[in-house]
Length: 121
Image (cartoon, rainbow, N blue to C red; front, side):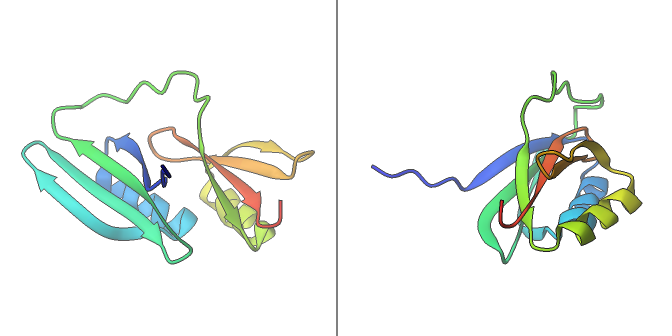
């Protein structure tokens, strides 16, 4: 039996703000969406992979999500690491750098951590 990873879900407070962040920071755009009573689910992706990030907005959840100690993350590799770092520095979303390992993390509008690694790591 073989299992294929297809998506990861993040619950978000402001769907449009989150979608704009992921578009600017990581080049992810809407692939599909589900609208239901009290919720909207948007699947983001790009041509580099068929893996999707699922953003879920719930109409009755008005407070920030409790992310615990943020000891989880989604990782993205990038061909031009320096260009990506400059973009994220300009956006002000870099939350942690480990120069010894050659990686850094950015945080999205809801506080989720995203690891950025050079393509050939």
